[in-house]
Length: 277
Image (tube, rainbow, N blue to C red):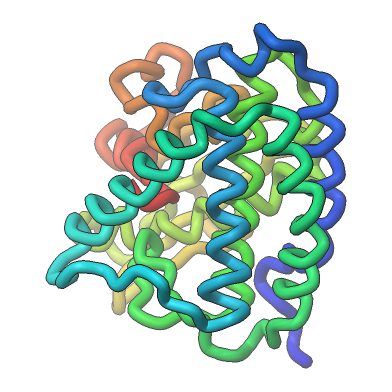
């Protein structure tokens, strides 16, 4: 089998272990702390993680569509419907204790990881990764998208309770590699000369550089470039995942970002959103 651009298949199980370890360490006050997801506290995020995993098993593994979506004519319709589902679940699970949420997550974690491991990475995915501009996606990209969701919700909890542990290169770098798959789509209407290079840097050893290159057919994402960048934007690791998951917007963090070269192109990078939002 040919090499995968991003391979997250072996990361779900250890990330699940870190989640359960984290949740068991929380006290009563921790469960009520506010997260960067402005409408959700820690317990709400945990409930959402459980909802997501149950949906993976029911819909993706078992093919059970218990609730039919409304007519989806455009991307915003999908966002509204998913936000409604998320809100309904979080409200309903307010009656569940933290201990019960942990018990449920422990009981299904391996089942979810096993399902992901069963998917052939080069088969067509059940759902496309719309925020990357894809109308169809391979399973490897679908799994990478699922991994970023699982990672960033756990990181929201860790950030709220000031407990680190998944900002390492092992867990963080695949998140950024997946997030940046949205960069060509972000620039799809941006005009530039052929061979223009934009470098996006995430600080620290867990980060790296990604290069957006203008070709005759559009924009393409690469891990290296043969010519000097026209614009370089350096984003601190601590705000990168919050920015690209839309918990903050570019104007709120612009003073923390370093920009060199073409300011218009560099600032466009900050508009990338790599979640359904």
